[in-house]
Length: 124
Image (cartoon, rainbow, N blue to C red; front, top):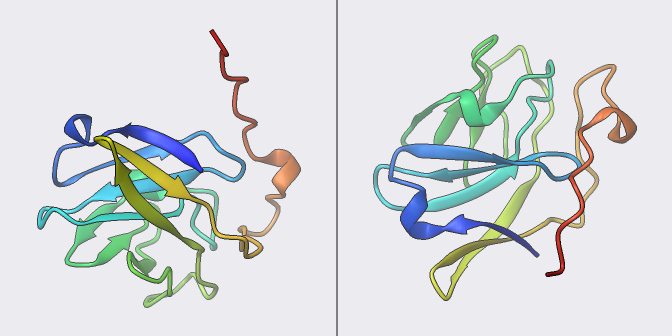
């Protein structure tokens, strides 16, 4: 389980990127719903946290592929593969992400080894 941030720090209409491997995008919609998807478009290496959100869809900022925030399903080319969706809960005011056990669909040329490695967490 990954702690994203306190709910109070992610305003409706905003998104953030978690430096997990692969990265995860957390979306707080204008309607107040929370969603988490793999952050990388399956067509090309682009952050979906930087994309445009409308209704329950996020549009990739590079080539306008759209992904369903609820399921990760792709709706518009050039992307052809879906992205993973992750369970989101709020525990004691913090947004928590339970990462999917499914294998991620990464864009051509990008591997798990080439995705950013998160920095070690301090135990103090």
